[in-house]
Length: 80
Image: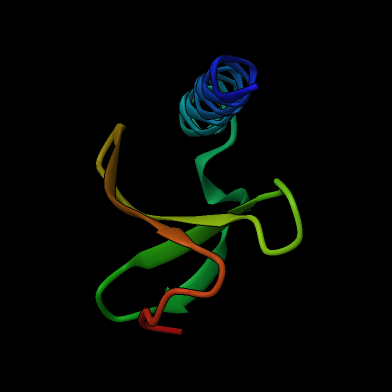
């Protein structure tokens, strides 16, 4: 039973990693689609749906680049 749980949790973690990476990469196509968190600093957030609370990617746009600053769990304390 424990082996099945370990395998299941590893598969979920891998799926989550792929989802977060693909969401981050998708910002190359439309970087301004994330909501503005701090207009002066240029901080934006992109919501990633996963489970009950999901994840939030905080990023900035610097000239032609998108820089991902941090990925938060939906229930984690973070700048709003």
